[in-house]
Length: 102
Image (cartoon, rainbow, N blue to C red; front, side, top):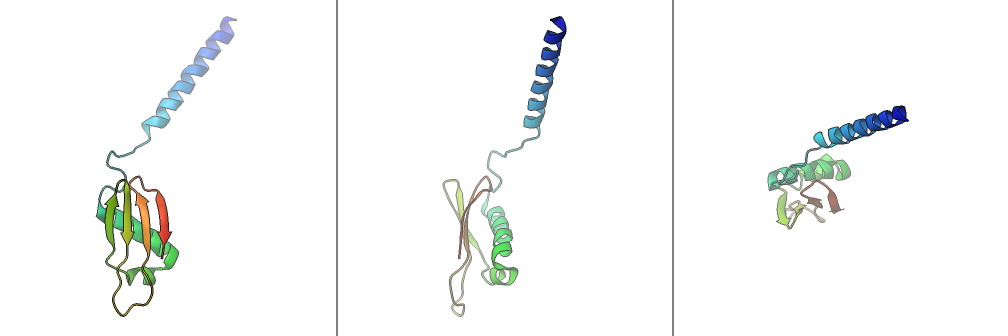
């Protein structure tokens, strides 16, 4: 009986140690992973280039970003000679993609 109790205590200790180690390696900045418009635009351009292609997205520069609550709304710009709409993406401050459209 003592043997089982001792092993159970060791297993519980190791489990608690592992759980604590996992939390030690997690990092979540208070201001979010996208704390400002420059960071949000940089991440948005990477994602949009992957979806629509580098040439298409670079033609839509400069991108503009506005913060609505915890969501960055980022969209490209267009000039009068360009036909069609612009790419837009909504990103939560924690980095999650909420919406992509063109």
